[in-house]
Amino acid sequence: MKRLDEHEARQDTRIMDILETTKGSPFDARFDPVKGGGAQRLHMIRESFIREMTRLAITHSAINLSQGFPDFDPPREAIEAAHQALESGGNQYTITWGTPPLRQAIAAKMQRWYGLDFDPDQHITVTCGVTEAILATLMGIINTDDEVIVIEPYHEGYLPAIVFAGGVPRFVPLESPDYALDLDVLRAAFNSRTRAILINTPHNPTGHIFTREELEGIAELCQEFNVVAVTDEIYEHIIYDGHPHIPLAAIPGMAERTVTISGLGKTFAMTGWRLGHACALNPLSTILRTVHDFMTICAPAPLQAACAAVLSLPDEYYTKLRADYTERRDKMMSIVTKAGFTAHSPEGAFYVMADFSGWDFDGNDYSFARWLPANLGVAVVPGSCFYGTKGMGKKTVRFAFAKKMETLQAAEDRLCR
Ligand SMILES: Cc1ncc(COP(=O)(O)O)c(C=O)c1O
Image 1: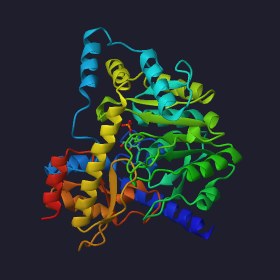
Image 2 (image 1 turned 180 degrees about the vertical axis):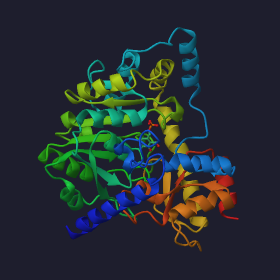
Image 3 (image 1 turned 120 degrees about the vertical axis):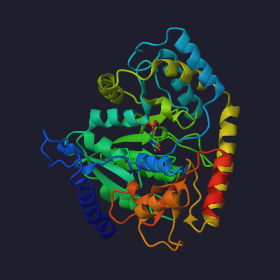
Image 4 (image 1 turned 90 degrees about the horizontal axis):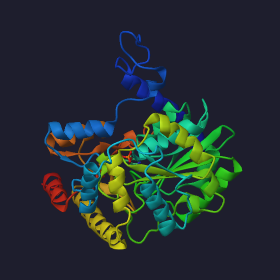
């Protein structure tokens, strides 16, 4: 319990830190709104560090291992189906929840991979990426000052989503080196104000895949405290060494209180297409659909047609995907080790959190992440931007390895010279 109290005290100071970084910027809520400045809800948020790092990579012509997008193309089937949809009238709004063929394909996928039953007409909503699905869900279920439990490190889009929805984040850490979830620490974070918990498995940035035991522990707490689970399973097919991906909705008692979110961006190398989906039983499905309807109306129509086509790709696609990513993962691990970092090998997703304590570098993760592209020509993400708690991640940076082997080789040549 003491550990959690200390952890919470550090969370408050971390928020103060964020306030300091926004001081005097357009996000400083103390600005006069006429002269400049945003709504008070923005006072905890600044622009994305990850996308800032991509811009830094461009400035320095660095190899961009910061933002999590592939430097290779989607399957030919997707591109051809998109062309065909553009040429054959698929250019207007679709039904707000997504085209029937795409929703049917998502329902078939959920049944085929996980044995989960969702009615495409009622329970499946196609969104503009996972980002929108999470935001629509939280905006639909969170009342002002409700608490949302976030496992940290966390994807940097989660904090803005909670804040936009009017909620308050409560962070629970995954500790290195193995990033397992301590269920006692998690229990201490649940209380009568807890409305939702966000679970990302396979996990960005640590690569942790939540085990059945961890998921059962989460399920027990959600039921005891009547909490909604919102899962982000965008890396569901990028898994290594036979680790099984288990959706939380498949754990007994969780089907009716889980919103299962995933997307096509990572599995099919199409992050710019902005296609995601949320699967939930009612009333959760109706609630999130209402927000989605007015937030974006629908996801891009021709790309929905193309996505229905890729979801029917045979099993060999997924076997090859895992084999290719395993090769990239092994290469990335060998590069960081050779370059003097220490890192835990990821079980899933396509990131390595690497500790740079072994480098003769006098500075924190932000200065290291700014120094690296300028001096060695490789861009990464500072570790602490994945944490809400002050002091965590200060000696780490994140490498994204969804890259061609030649790109990774070029990064090795620069980092290990
Ligand atoms: C865990 C996680 N969730 C969500 C996203 C964003 O997903 P989308 O591009 O589908 O909005 C990312 C992107 O890197 C991610 O890593």
